[in-house]
Image (cartoon, rainbow, N blue to C red; front, side, top):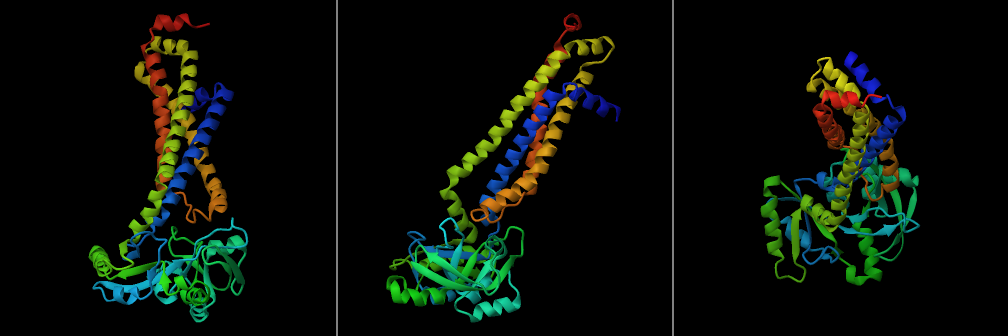
Length: 385
């Protein structure tokens, strides 16, 4: 306890300088934590992917559709348990800023393949019976104030026109990384309207979702499916759901890399600030360290004092930064929830914050400590006064 009291008193001998340094560390740790959380949110879809789900799309690009009759052929492949399909709808609610993921799906097989979407039995039954019914996530419902029975009109950006849907159920995520901001409805409803206005898109789906019996069969099933449709008018590319999600991440790889670089640049900047603070502190106390040497205290004691003071300042800033990260994350989650549905602070992020703080503390104290240890007693005493 005595050594802690000494370290705290030493750290706050110059209250203004120490307070500003702690504030800088707090802001740096806060920024670092938010940037690392943003990166985790970017990869949330990949982490939530199931090892028993495959995605089949057009081999040219996902923007090109696949024939609806492919379903029966896929179902016959050995190892395939369930086949569902869907189409990206691309609708917006009122203003184009109100963007969120919305899909037309085959409801029964889709819900079977995604048990992480928890829907009350009565809501599920109501959705299955109503072709104009839709299911929305809890976060989406909270954002727009939607409730069961509401009629929602989406403006189509791909399938033009105004589309009316009735909210029949609100789903919850089984896991904390489950996306609760999606909107899905009956593919049959979309197909019926399309037949009347966009006949070229009739009986076409955007992708197939395949549930395999066992994860180890995924590779063989993917090869078998693509082999069936080889040299057809619409060749397929089948991959695991994780690989499919990673494909989208790869499109924005440069952005993710830039965020990662910035997160570490922030740490290096604050490291320089703390190092400057410790250098100034050490320079002011050279005389004191010389007196300690005359009293028999060795380099180890002086090292402990300087490193301990640096650690006290850095840990205080780190703790404040971590505490502020939680409310800041909630604010960002609310503002960016449409683009990053899963925005949680992971254990890895908290651990990185701690590692960053310890790194700042130790690296910043190395040069000042070396200088204090090497200075001769006579030179140190000469500086007194």
